[in-house]
Image (cartoon, rainbow, N blue to C red):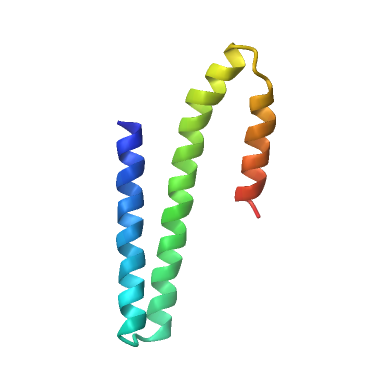
Length: 84
């Protein structure tokens, strides 16, 4: 169910992107496009937060229980890339 929620979020984001493309093609007012772009950015950030939470609760916790401590370094690297 978590995977399905993430897929649904991405499909909504995809729809927002298509909407922005349509706005550009129809020569919409730039400010309206910027507002929609900010909404997409917020939606992607929300997706990332959800995905990170799922990853920590699932994969990271499992790997740590199995003694695979390198997963912490992988998580740190991923978080650093997200925070650029």
